[in-house]
Length: 468
Ligand SMILES: *Cc1c(COP(=O)(O)O)cnc(C)c1O
Image 1 (cartoon, rainbow, N blue to C red):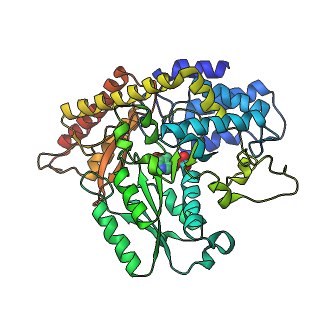
Image 2: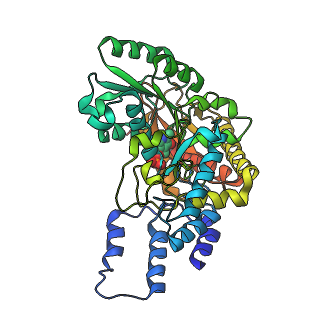
Image 3: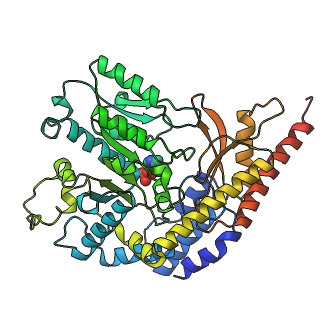
């Protein structure tokens, strides 16, 4: 516990990353050979020091990288309790309290997304990737009745799925694992606002059908990883319904914003999704990994995953949902729901709403400040992800300069931002995302300061070396 307290109090004043190399880490670890046991306090201190020296502190309020937030304090406590009681989530008979707690959370979250509580089905998962995989196999099972028995060998046409070119690459893994291969994923072009282009989608579907392929799944991304873009969900729901395809919304990160009435409109149509992927370990700030897969078809997951095993308890009364092991990839699964339950219990819906609203506001503040400082914001989203460039007089932004700014910021230890590529031509941009509930206005100022200092130092360097 002292380790936890020390870390949380000293974190804001620490450099975010140390720039240590893999060799440095290996050298530190090479001292441990396990030839003889050591005392527990020494072992714990050694690990804490290792984190201190080598970790990129993604829990830091000025870490603005990928969606790897600081853990809620109740989440940290919950993971310890989960380890203490160590319930297995496979079966209600072994772990009635844990299983029902997860069922309760799944029902309540289903309602937040506009599903009818009584008709939904869902499971906790390791994260968005597993949820997207679950969506893909659910769609296969739905569209191809022979799939469950014969797999892809039994299919007559080539199945294809559609996701925005800005969508998540877990669909490639999912397609490979399902035996379909990369080629079944259609990366649909995006429009000028980086949203999935509806006309392009319809053209591709038409061409696929004409070629005898079998479109079976449309994915809307609600908050892209790259640029926080929300696809036109309602229009995609419409197309999916007309084309008789499974409609999945990947709301892994952005889904948390459904709690805010002022942003709810962005998500209109999500209640029509056949399934939703949502990661509490992203914007809800519970420790990794915590994914949530929801579908509005009750009983459907059993069609995909149910198996019988002689050593597992017989299914109980039919009034109860089937055991989780019959509705999920996972079997002996960890208690994922507790960290969400305890965090939500302490915060309440209003508390969560306030935290999410605060992060949206910090994103807006950083966006405004960057524009004031002459940077060009390249993405349009109300969510707190800012993609921006530092254009030169000719209006260009060269990749070398963009990379140099990010590297300089990271090296300063004051903030952490990254680069990514967006849009059809893969423009390189700087990317900053508010991921911590502890990010304050002062932190935003400091991040901006680090970015401006990076820009100045690169300009000075350029001036010194001009004419060389
Ligand atoms: C993070 C993310 C994923 C992958 O989720 P994991 O929890 O990392 O497996 C999928 N889709 C989107 C939009 C994401 O942001």
